Length: 325
Image 1: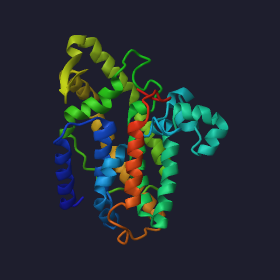
Image 2: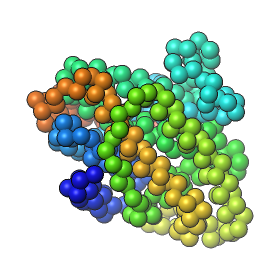
Image 3: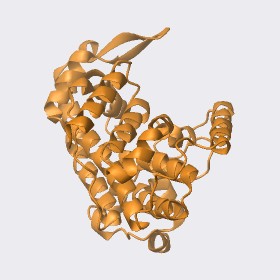
Image 4: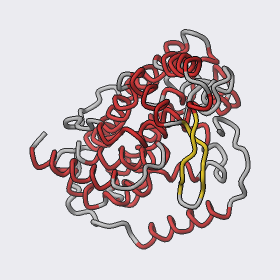
């Protein structure tokens, strides 16, 4: 990585961390999409960097759609454990084959994130071929979100919030509290995005890597909870005008130490993979020139985003089947 690119990443890193982090769902997703831009080759980075605020701001859009778009929630996770110990190797890589084997009701109940990423890779390739700038940006931002979700261990298990093992709240601890407190010391330099010869296999491998970490995510929290009493495990902090109960700084730091950099590694992997999927889609499209594309989203795209944001604000708050906590 060039010294200029390193400097750019370091600068945006400091800017992002100057404000309070808001969880993988907000701060983390936005940081991952933003960092992914700097993994791209010169032929892509000019267009992507010109639109880096779009890609950053809209990295969280899929989460805002969860309560108002049918079928959105399952795109963020996959409960591998409900399909048996060998599910990573036996689940069909083709979504059509998976529907034929398991039924779409089961798939939507237990998540489809790797199939979603594979589908979007094809859509992004087509957008590059069509030279459709708005669609390239729209798909890139959304795809970055789902790739990042696949890198979260608790997005790969039915016990996604420790609700089955008396560890409710662990999801927020892992993907929110730890980065909020400690990510200013993380190393996010990933090198240039690689071309993915087999992108479907890559996203499934990412899900498998995340799932392999579930045991340590749960076990270390359980062991630490047995050691530290509740009055030291939790504390209260001011968040704006609210006083909220959260995991204490001491508990979070010791948990982070036991995980030995796991959250940092997964965030770094996510940034690298997001860039890799963008890059691979562009190469597979024939490496079209992006220099002739508009440097800002169209007015139509801005209006579409504004309408979607308004609909999300007005959508009634209701439980969503699938990892709703």
